[in-house]
Length: 378
Image (tube, rainbow, N blue to C red; front, side, top):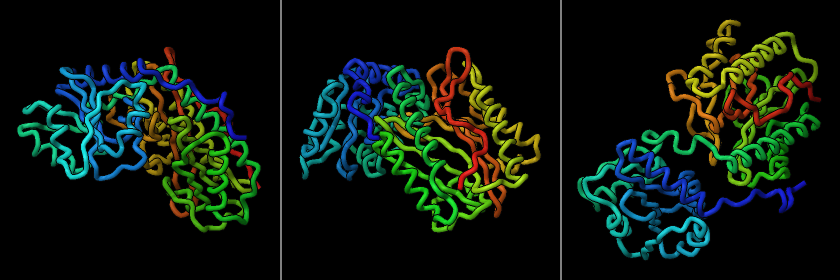
């Protein structure tokens, strides 16, 4: 059931990319930065539409500053791909050949003595090369300096996230119909990956299948364990569709669940509901975490909820903002993030329920709509 061409979203326009770059420069100025150095990674894709086919030792960097036009420094052999990908962004280009010093071209665009925000994904060799080429320059992490750069989604981005969420929901609905008992976790993980692609994902990032005691490890990699009747199974899966992420978790049981599994699942369901209900504009991110965590703590399982309640999602499946104690960033309409509390009983089983939620003008809206009730599978 591959999506038709009609299902593809309208491409981002030159105006979209220009507006993003201008906003990034304005945000950088407010953060006390003189400019931004954006290396291959999610920020470069979001700002320009360019995702290099291979991230190599060759320097590629987008230079953004108040006093010059946005300029992309690229290896000459990659310039055709860069020009094709960034045609809508209207970038200037500086190309360098193998055998040349790539940092000379970048240095000509940078002002000495300035403070630059630089991508977290920058290679140490590239940062050191820039420091040598531009004496007196200093650098700050882009994520630390501008954590909310990509956090607030516009309508076109939100439409892509909604489509990715619907595809993940369709995947879950179908996985409920496959056989679990007697199969390996890796077999079910392969089913999840196949279904995500059939429903339109171009990239599968993870397919967690944590059966029985493996479910007590939140990031368990699907292994060769044979799934047994009576197992609770944490399913957590997602990837990219039209360049934007999906991420959802549900916990199912093979055959009739024990009373304890039912009880723990209900606590997590109520905690997840409390976290979603806490979402509204102006509320600090940490309040979402507190709301979900309070339900689990009050039920006597506080020490068994061992991770943050949520993370942002967009051109990557994990990005700011984070729903965690100490994060006082207020929620803003257009932010999208997970709400995913869990309880993990070491050596026995785990339960996690996760939806992507977007902040609206009045509260929060789930982008995942499949049932959060405990489902029984064969």
